[in-house]
Length: 263
Length: 327
Ligand SMILES: Nc1ncnc2c1ncn2[C@@H]1O[C@H](COP(=O)(O)OP(=O)(O)OP(=O)(O)O)[C@@H](O)[C@H]1O
Ligand SMILES: Nc1ncnc2c1ncn2[C@@H]1O[C@H](COP(=O)(O)OP(=O)(O)O)[C@@H](O)[C@H]1O
Ligand code: SF4
Ligand SMILES: [Mg+2]
Ligand SMILES: [Mg+2]
Image 1 (cartoon, rainbow over the protein chains, first blue to last red):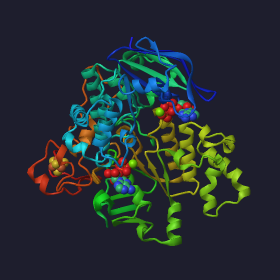
Image 2 (image 1 turned 90 degrees about the vertical axis):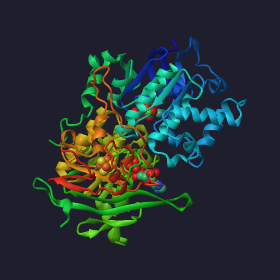
Image 3 (image 1 turned 135 degrees about the vertical axis):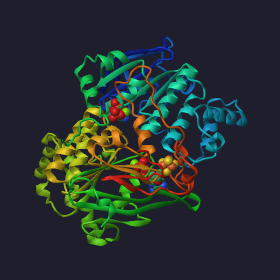
Image 4 (image 1 turned 45 degrees about the horizontal axis):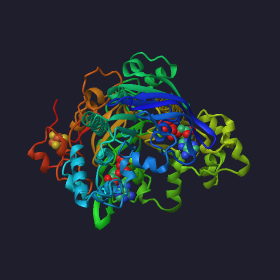
């Protein structure tokens, strides 16, 4: 078992936000988390990375990574794990990277911050290889660009390249395609699946798009109001939903050519 | 008579006419970034004009230029017989009242230290249309309109869910009784169930009050279900304009068709593959000569690289900007 989450409770201050969350993940599996806005999806995956914002903390339960509990990790332990054991991409990775520094500088700095023994030259080569790996054309050009010169899809690929450079075992993705149009979304989803195949990494993806969840996942978790209300294989959750909230979500997916709102 | 007014069925009057609107930003090094390239569109009274396109294609810039948040580089925006972009002073202020905006993340637009009732009534007070003593009653009325409990008036916005805050954003935008409401990715941050309820609310209010919506969204399914007219944008250009319900069967532009092929369906069969188009959108800093879609278009010919296709009508209510339309 790569990751095991047992009866996890997460609180901001003394307010419980997520309660009794349990799930597990094997190598190479893709798990989607779908559900209500504000139900705690981001909170869960941030807890897995030890990067809850503000006064967020795990208030009970356990997270086991390769059999070892990580809930009592020190900041230093997390720093070592982030990027190398697991890493994260966001809705707009382009916003995460500094807008006024070139992609290349940021990428090589990131590599050298994690692996100080790496020479600048080697870091540059690693970065270019990774950019080519995520199908970015002219990686040297990309290295020499400012983030705002890249499209949303390209920035998201840069985000994936940075996240995967140390071949982490888990890639966490928080709504990685919510800002993209459907063609770019399809490219990025395919890229994430490729990353899974190439590095045998496990993936946890938070998405509001049930089509995306249905397309790529082995397992799906449905969250509502801080609780996991349903979880199972893709076939179970999409094909034979049990909980009324799962059914409600599936029924609300807008379909091209479907029933119009104003008729 | 503007050619864009020709439509198949009898239509309500045009309320907003965007004519050849261009917006260029000057960025670092003095280079020009073309965010909106000669866009012409009409919105009809009481209807929804949907605008779809990928992040960075210029949707927000278009509506922000219409709202005069950005200064237009060239073009006109005709509203009630006058060019909005030329209006000054008190006239411009009154126009702003009639065209309101609902944002993707209303939290960013709300002052976290203000109670809900003050957030809701702030625009009315700014226009001198409401006395302090009337705030509570007005707040209750607005909350009822968007189906929120009246006792929310004394809450703070951070104690509310995303869907509830989005309802507040709508109530606030509608408080001034605008003729046009711009929804810029107003439901993108919400789950599909809450999104559905917000859309039903928008449609109910449209029917009751005859509001016109400019509905920006990158979810093809949603924008199709909401719109009477649908504009597809690519790299600052409108490449196709269709009437409601036509996109799934009658789209003609290669980009629109590519969009349709890339939609993830919940009930896809295992092993079924999606077909994303390859390549990247060119940078708006150096827009190619000729067709904006050339670098990703399978049908691209030499001619497409030289001549930019103009938006032309191919049937009633259906406009396409492509040299090689297949029938
Ligand atoms: N820094 C914080 N301090 C206090 N409460 C927070 C903080 N961040 C999030 N919350 C609260 O925790 C709950 C869960 O939020 P979270 O961001 O995990 O939801 P989500 O499922 O990711 O929602 P969305 O679909 O809108 O992204 C919400 O009620 C939110 O208001
Ligand atoms: N204030 C600005 N200064 C410079 N460039 C901008 C500004 N606002 C938007 N842009 C650029 O204009 C283009 C269109 O952006 P935008 O209208 O926000 O697209 P959309 O809303 O379709 O995602 C993008 O390339 C964006 O980077
Ligand atoms: S004009 Fe040419 S390049 Fe442009 S969409 Fe049509 S066929 Fe493709
Ligand atoms: Mg979230
Ligand atoms: Mg935008």
